[in-house]
Length: 134
Image 1 (tube, rainbow, N blue to C red):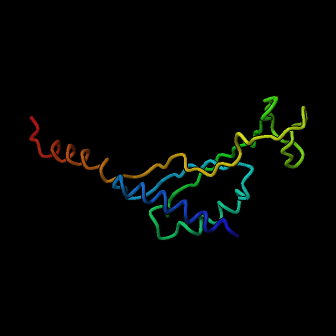
Image 2: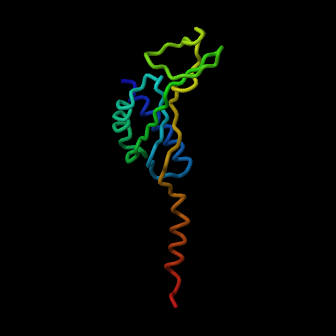
Image 3: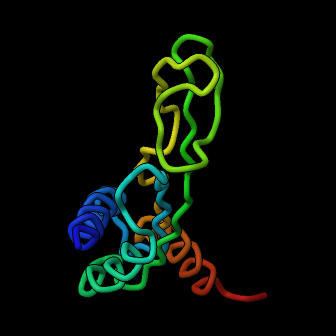
């Protein structure tokens, strides 16, 4: 099951970005996953649940957006979604098709709980509480 190594890589990449931002934890990792990859979304979710233990992502939710495979003929430029299996030959003219989407494995964004974001609020809150009331 190669999904565990993929989940570990996703977490490593997300944690590196989160640390750059001074984050205390990662809340959400949004992933774009193409249907032309060999990755099974349910297996990736399961692997993520295991791999996130003891990391900044320990409470994170993995949101997976499935990106459909779309192909286009290099000659007649007809675009379509393959229906039966994966045939990379144009039904219109018989020439090769290029893949426009469906190969994605991309972290679109992460949501973090950041120390930096809380610091100004805490400072403001402390200043407000220390002011004397009328």
